[in-house]
Length: 70
Figure (tube, rainbow, N blue to C red):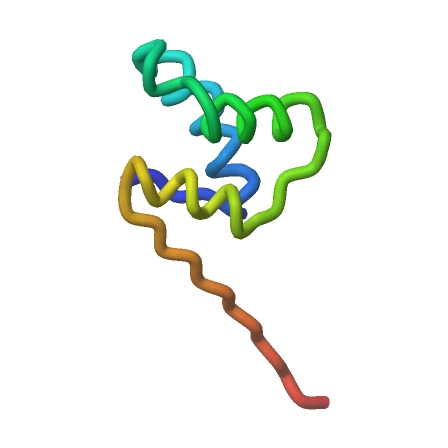
């Protein structure tokens, strides 16, 4: 299990660690498009990043909000 501070950080890791090792027939289409959009900062939504990550493993995103009254 790997932990990341954000979905974007997890997706960056996927782009550098998983994507390059994909078989050429799997790299086609949405995976290459998502990789290009992220790598070249052309815009990719968090939802789309999560969808891609989910195809390669379990993704659990938790948001923690702490409020301390005055």
